[in-house]
Length: 232
Image (cartoon, rainbow, N blue to C red; front, side, top):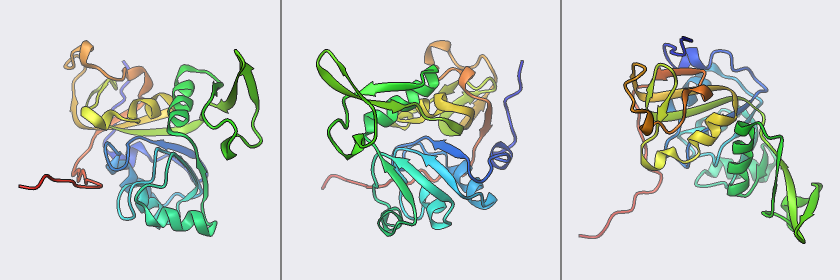
């Protein structure tokens, strides 16, 4: 049995080098791999291409990497609540590829399935399609988009076992399974690490075949991006 368990985030990301392409799970601040992001900031790698739904906020999540100018390119669905992301985009300091959210998800899925590319109607006739191949299927035009090639994928789950099987909690599942599937090497940080066999097979959201390294994280802040409460 392959031992996938590593000590902590520092060990898990030790061989991520400057210039690599890294996928990060999460949506906004929900389900982001907090421990690994902190470790990447401390490691000081730079010139990274980051694939993630968005870049979080200025002082948390991927925003911390933007503050340290660690990213060369951001591939995301939207700018979100990150003013520094917006500033670097408008100033030309950061290369940004904004793509439709469904296309982002499907390009990750294609990578996980071993498919080189997909055809999608999203973006046809817009700036998204400039310089890209299109093809007609049943008299409807589709845009060719390539699967992502992630050197590393980093995700966060609620529970995992020593074989890498993962369970996500509620909406924190979001992009995490898709990112995990797309990585050449996938790192999973979990709130609770249990022995193999402790998770009911019917409850597993992502099978361990996709996960190469796993560790139990700590000190999760789980910050809420926008808090909305009902009036009493």
